[in-house]
Length: 413
Image (cartoon, rainbow, N blue to C red; front, side, top):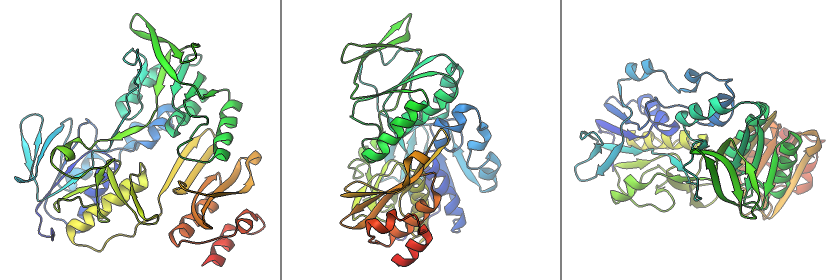
């Protein structure tokens, strides 16, 4: 469907994908009405710093925002904040709002993001038990980040480990509980898992793998202990939950838009309704470099799908689709990830983990599919390009530190 004549675009959501869609629509020449509907009181802002610099107090709130309020005014973008969209009426082309009003659309972008998985144990509703997903969460947590306080973190994914690093740097006693047999088990190799376990242990955190939380106990409504399945108990002043997220697909599902672990989209971020697009954490998209569909929870994905949806609405050429990339900051370690390592059958280590500057490459049938680079930007940047070209590299070539990544990449072309 040609939507180049659209006069009204509605964007549901207030995160990176929504902000990028607004900017790209105007950049591509859209002159009509843009209405952004967001549940939070804040304008679209960055979420990655919430578990890093912002939690530590090293980043001012105003620096989180993608654009200041004046930009939305200058671009004639109507921001409807602190309001929840309750229904998409596809036949009437309207989005109904919780206060009883509605907004009309010619094209709709669903950028509703995701929400934390609820902690399924008794005591999860006690005071002092927190998720870490938005500004309000951090504002509730930060006053309690006091040296000497005991923090229990449930889940050793990126959010959990980033929060653990911040808490240790602020002087809290930290215990991390992970049900799997290693940290970051769902996203990286045993080599990287062991490296991060060793680093957090060296920094004074207590990392417990194969540990299942059974319940939380409290006194006067406030959390005081975490009880594990083996019966052991941990004192806890703060409990931070990081056990994964769920895509916010309910609005789309209720409107009859196809979903399967996310809102299903084509390569242009378009759903099975040609007027409706989905972008960001909530969308399941074609992963063009891997020949399958999936959800990507990343800044890269939100930016890219914001651009793709805007380009499709405006009838512009499809923007280039980059290799997926991610990052994590823990202590003085910068982890940069290019590609998706699921399905690898061989790993290659370049550099020395003891020096805290190395990379792990992931190969599948000889083809490079991903890299985890610790304090190693050249390996990250070169791998992005190599993954996009489907390069096949010999393990001994990748591990040979006498050759620069620039030389290796040039020889692979």
